[in-house]
Length: 155
Image (cartoon, rainbow, N blue to C red; front, side, top):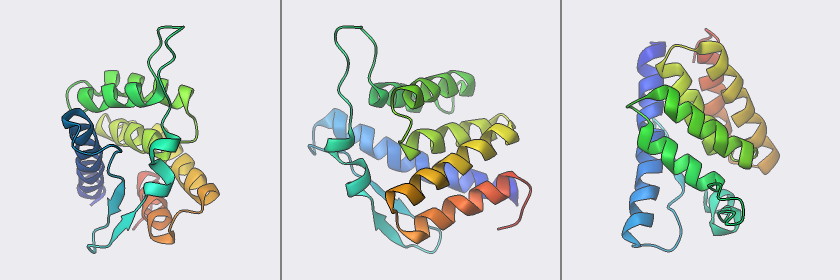
């Protein structure tokens, strides 16, 4: 059951993030689409938490990628080499430690390589960030369930 639930979450998160990346690349929309879709079909708009004002610009002086660029790189690597994706998500987190999406995708990648303690720690951080941002309870509860599941709990 845990593996099936983890796959559904990973697939959902990957689909949302890939949609965001695709729209940015196609320049079809000025800002990324940002929402969550739950198992019961509920759709929650998260634009206020991940709109353009929350995106970081690349730091041209240092030649470093921005947090969003590291995240996008991690999304490209996800499913291929999870260790590389984890490294990219970690760089995104270092650049922007308050973006729950970065922790969520790294947790999913950790689950994919069976690093359950690291996944649980990232899901715990996702819950903390969402609570601090006043996110909808459904979204917080979803990641609480993921956290509990990654620790061997039940949904």
